[in-house]
Image (cartoon, rainbow, N blue to C red):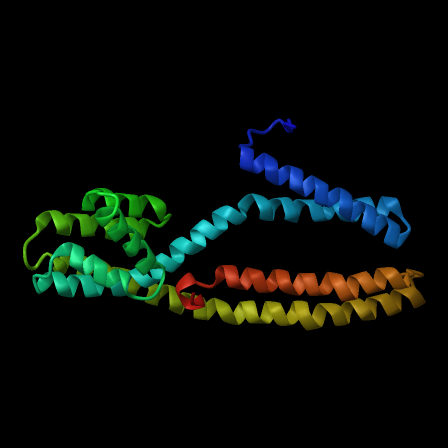
Length: 252
């Protein structure tokens, strides 16, 4: 079954669209039967379709970006150790092996580099190039290019350029941390407003609306709004705050 939407969608996007449509139909039937109103159920199901499709469509890209951020968070410490060992005259591949024994996602990528060189017969330059191609991070790509240049230079003292780019990444992380600390105050106020002020205003509005404006909410509607709607809104704000948090501050 090939869905023609008038948009150019790849196979993965079409599969995500099919799953979102199936979810929407199931959601429509469930809400329609629960609310005893198929039209209202259809409206709510259509509203649910867009976030579900968006999550399915962009989740793989988000995971790839998040993983790149974790590698970017770990790699400056690995680079520092590599730079020190290169300045001491330790063979290049041995420094990569030592980096692969550390903790974090960067160590995992260095372990893949070592495996490609030792078990698959790849050259160090090719293994490092594959490393940069796997990670969607401009800083990581620059760091890997510098590592490749240090290997090609091959002399004692080649670790200094590697050390400089590690310091650059750490400086950037420090700046991002300071900027986020300022944003966190506003984000915290946003969460307080959504989790406490908005529900209180809604309850006041529903009481006044039913008494003066003749706006009557059924028990089922109030239950869905209070027990489902507001918690979902709180989770959305929490995920937004998490998305704004620099990856190196989240931990593994």
